[in-house]
Length: 116
Image 1 (cartoon, one colour):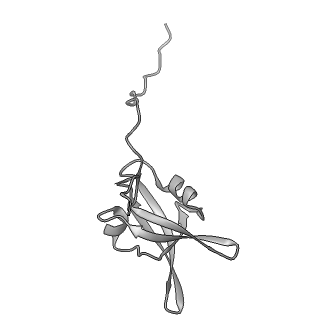
Image 2 (image 1 turned 90 degrees about the vertical axis):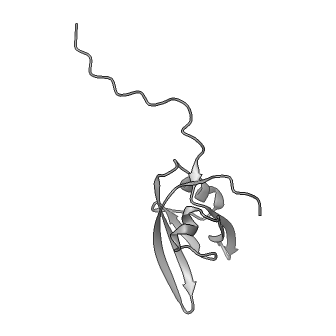
Image 3 (image 1 turned 45 degrees about the vertical axis):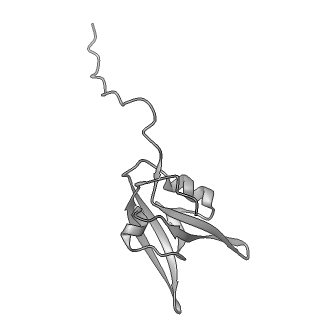
């Protein structure tokens, strides 16, 4: 009898629960031939709001280093397992300058937000 390698512990089967986001609602803003994702609303108590860093009107540039310019792509990249980290890069127009900044958040808001 050949020795069998030890089996890896079995992962629980079934879905891991609903995907979680960071509590940001975006709107697509088209200017010329480019589309920007603008923060429209922050979910009260969500990771984005409690970070104190993200404001309505900020523009999403990247999610985990990947460029985003549609709400579908942003949703696809942002939603993931609850508690997992995510890095979002934004730009903000402040007076006569443009600030770029990154925020690391942990996903924790269910994907479904109440209608406004």
